[in-house]
Length: 456
Ligand SMILES: *Cc1c(COP(=O)(O)O)cnc(C)c1O
Image 1 (tube, rainbow, N blue to C red):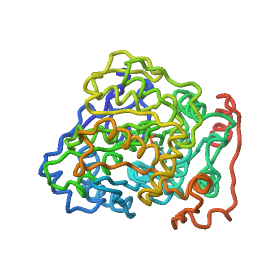
Image 2 (image 1 turned 30 degrees about the vertical axis):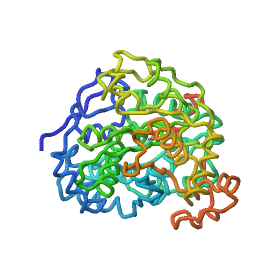
Image 3 (image 1 turned 180 degrees about the vertical axis):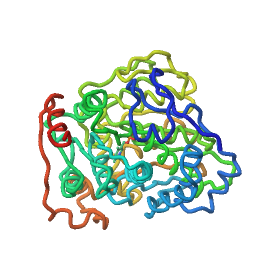
Image 4 (image 1 turned 90 degrees about the vertical axis):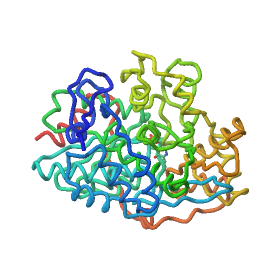
């Protein structure tokens, strides 16, 4: 298999191998690493996934990006170890399904990426006897998924920044009750402020010696695993049939949907991606008008993990459509909007609509959704209303549920009057002791904290 190098979306950094991009996170020119070409999987191989377990599909698909960078034996072991939980496709009506990506250890879809990335990093660091300090900003679920995926590893320390007012108590406890090599910092600020601090630290040459790396959705190591569940859904619901599938993806930082778009470019027969955002509607507006304006500050919605006013991965998306956008959101070359509109339908779902969707899904179908999954489901329903020619009883549609409803008990109780059952991974968390620090949103303070704690 030919080795695939990665280039920066800003185009001013040297090409990197997968290993280098994984350990660096962001490119030196502040762009994001993207494969310089997207490998194509032959249709008969995709058809053969129908009989494979999830972890085997994960091996097959990621091998296309990692070939030559890791032995098959090691990659097989990593995918098998990372994906030891179920990936239910819940039937709702006709051929409409919800894919529950919430069965991992932190009950969020981010486990898929974090567990694989953590294991890949550990693999390379062990070999090279190196250490890393992972910095990550979270709007809720990234932090706990990353903290859990790296918890207890010898050569990796983790610092997670979170906006105190934007995460639920349960989300916070999933991070703050760990300890060991995991340090959590709360900020009286927005997610975007937390993300800005992390980005500034990466660009700060005086911190180079701390061996910083990112685990946010900007890391290429998160993107590759997020292509896999699209192949999986197709393999189970379409198999080898000559059919196209529709996905609806609740989106914030656009890592999840980028996994889907890359899967489509790899040859997965996708008819349409529905990109469903909450009230942070910068992308639906862009797709419609060609005008891109980040939303500052981002709007606080009940689907809190999607409160992103300027998705980091949007520059990757633009690059796939032959355009360029820098990290501030400025467009250098306009992407092929026509093609984008052919592939995608984007819609913004208000909080009120989200709540009504949770109620409607429960009363009509006994489908239990939490706010993020409800944004996706509402997007799918609206798409089928707008395009009745695709609303046929045999059209396969899959809406992604990205978190377990038990992570949002207050909201579910308020809307449905019931308490979602806790998955085993969340049991006992209430009683554990929390430990975290708080800082302001000035970069100087954050830098001093890092140097004081990790600098000597
Ligand atoms: C992170 C997250 C999202 C958004 O995913 P992106 O890759 O950032 O678009 C959606 N739902 C939940 C529960 C999340 O944690």
